Length: 355
Image 1 (cartoon, rainbow, N blue to C red):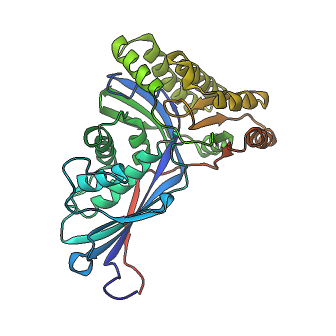
Image 2 (cartoon, rainbow, N blue to C red):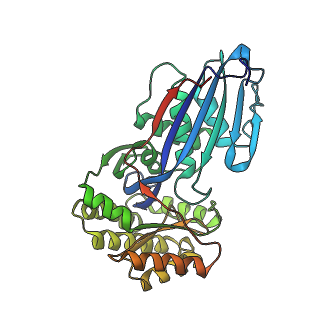
């Protein structure tokens, strides 16, 4: 590497993904107010920003989207219409952060969590990216401000339907109880438990990817329209809200059976919104989990085709392993994703490159 190619410094950032979002759908604009319980886990989203002085780089901004095998230069003068084309979320976040023009940089993004797994991976990537680029701008954003900025990129810049819980979980990490008192404003209470409860919860949790990415669909648009018409205090949303507080209290008490019941009740409440929110593949996995004595299951995110399921297993670790093996034998696309509870949320640090 020549002197001209060597970066002045490198910024690294990581942010966890989210599972077991009991109370999801109530953190949205049409819910108005809500409550969500969720858990931040690894594998996390990783961002690395190699920073160059502008005169040392002919191309000012380069994006390296490793999961897609794409590396390209970001147009410094984008068109007014459809200016974010290849990876809109990444490109919009970079534009939002307004990095000083005397700096050139290459952004590398990677995540071991599959795209479209309904684990808030896009939110984790955006939180990690904004957190890293924040080190190049005056002042510093708090984790809460990073989460709000990431959510704003999706909703205001890209015009997407997006709640607030994914970004907050990635920014804070750990086990969270989120109270949204007025969209998009919320408080985050991190659930602190003794190590034996933390370790036991981690041992019991399983994340099963259903083998295909989740995408917004006509079903989701129909559910949103029905909830919008029903109002923020409709029974469907109230059923979901209640599972969040029950999950929080169960974890504080080390009551894994209680947490499992809240997960099941939340998934059944999702089905009442629309039966297709719990897909046939998800139901196959749930039935296998039930047969192996699992305490609970939650279709992650909004539900629908593809995505993933969080399973809470019972006391017996051998039964958990047999369950995973049978699930993966049921369908070659089904895959267990090893997870670990995240002690931390967004982490950002800078270092000088080696000679």
